[in-house]
Amino acid sequence: MTRKRRMFDIALPDDAPEAPPPDTSAPPRRGPMASAIAENAEALKARQAAQDAIREENDALAHEFVALREAGHVVQELPLGDIHTYMLTRDRMPGEDAELAELVTSIREVGLSNPIRVVPRPDGSGYELVQGYRRLAAYRALESEGQGGWDRIPALIMPGEADIAGLYRRMVDENVIRKDLSFAEMAQAAMNYAADPATEAMDLSAAVAALFQSAPYSKRSYIRSFAALLERLGDVLAYPTEIPRALGVALAREIKSRPEIVAMIRERLDGWDTRAVADELEVLRSFTVTDALGDVVEQLEAPDVKARTGRAAKTKTTFHLRSSAGQVKCTASQGRLEIKVDRDFSAIERARLEQAIMSLIDGLG
Image 1 (spheres, rainbow, N blue to C red):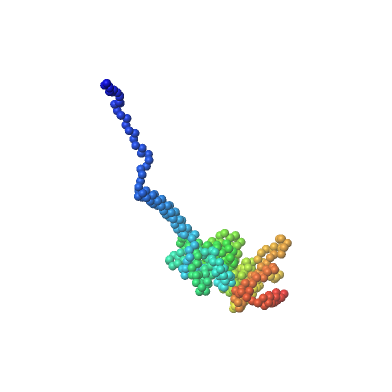
Image 2 (cartoon, rainbow, N blue to C red):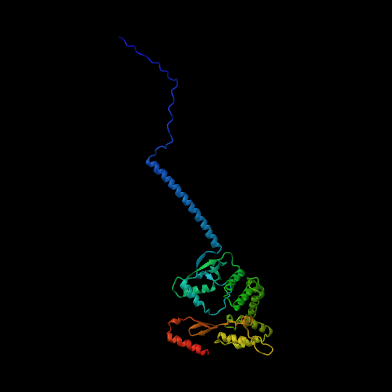
C-alpha cells in the first residue's frame, strides 16, 4: 500500500519584522583604570574650586587689611628710636612727673592698653609723636632698665601728611577729654601754638579758639588768664600746674590792674629753691584781689555750695613735696589723707609704721 505525502502551503509575509534595537540605557562598563582617572579628575576640579574660593577670600581680607592700616586703625610695633617729639612743643610742662612711676609699673605688669599715635615725618626719618607722650616716656624708662623686650611700642600710624595745626589739636584734645591737663598746661599749649610759625594763629586768642573749640567760653577765658599769668611769671614759678583755677584767674586780673606787683612777686620767689607747693601758693594768694577794707578775698575753686544747698562744700588740696625718698604727692580732703611716694611701705615694720602715722596725726593737732 502506498502512502501519500501531504504538502502544506504556508503563507509567509513578504517582509520579515525588524529586530528591536539594542538597549543602550545602561552605561557601558568601564575598566578600573578609567574609573580611577575619572574620580581623580573630579577631585582635582573640586580642589581647584576650593582653592579659588580661599584665594578670593584672602584677597578680600588683604585689601581690607591694607585699607584699615592706611586709615590708621591697625596697631603696629615701632622701634622707640624711630619715634621723635620734635615737631610739636608738648603740652606737658617740664618738671618731674610724680605719677610716671605708677604708669611704668602698670605697663610692666599688664601691658599697654592704649597704643600711642604717630604720623610719618615729612623727611622720612621715622615718625612724629602725636598722642601718648607719657606712655612713650614710660616705655623709654622701661627700656633704660635693661631688662629687654621694651625697645618697641604699640602704635597707630595716622594717615596723611603732618599738618602742624591738626597735630596740635589732636595732642590737646586727647588730654582735655581725659581731663588730664591743668589750666597752666592748657595755657602753655595755646602759647606754643600761637608761637609756632607753621600754624595760622596770629595771637593767643586765636590759638585758644583753635585748640579748644569744644570748650565753653568760660573755660577758654580761664585759659587766656593763665596764659597772661605765665607770660609774666612763668620763669619764676616752680609749680604752675598746681595753681588752682580761681587763684590763677584772680591773680591774672590783679596783674592787669596793678602791673607793679609782678616785680614784687618775682622778688619773693626768685632764688627760693627750697620752697614747697604750699609756699608758692601762699605767696601768690597774698597778691590777689582785696576789698575796700583791705581784707583778702578768699579764692575758692567752686561756688559756695553751702549757701545753695545748706551743706558744707567738699574741699580737696593736692600738693607735691620733695623728700629723701623722692617726689611725694599728697592729697588731703574731708576724712582722707593720701600720700604717694615711690617706696614699698609694706616692707616697713608694722610697729614703726604705726608710730610714724600716730606722730603725723598728733602733729596735725
